Length: 210
Image 1 (cartoon, helix red, strand yellow):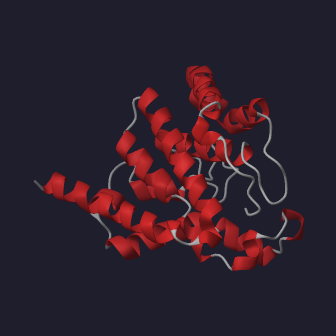
Image 2: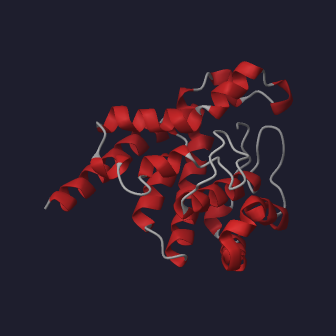
């Protein structure tokens, strides 16, 4: 019974946030990114026998922190970003977790476990070599899968500062920093990424925002 209530509660959180954020046209490109990352991360998690529900929930909420950004940051080209701008960008995973915990009251499902949903979100810009936002090296596979999906979607989509990269390039960039970590799963992941970009859901209008 406790597990059923927890499931209903976390699903309610996800749907409530979806409904609220998807109505904000200012943030529509960010929301569309989260939707595609969620689908892709779920597929990767299923093929790698990870906790699909946990990965998809983390993916659906991973960029909530961006919804606190000042409006102008969404339109500013990277070459014009200031140190203050970069600090805001680097803080968005932590901000995402803060929003979830404030909204959710530290739900045991979202905030506990190894890893927890919040852990997966917090570390989704980390690299196994420590070259990430927070310099974390001990990464759970769920976080790595979310990172791969996040990078691939970003690279294969239009951005304010560039057009979408070719599929081949996007795939290589998505796995580049994780090859040693993923080992024999690299080919499987590349195949999944290649298949996903052929789907109709991946065909989208150019985005003018980050």
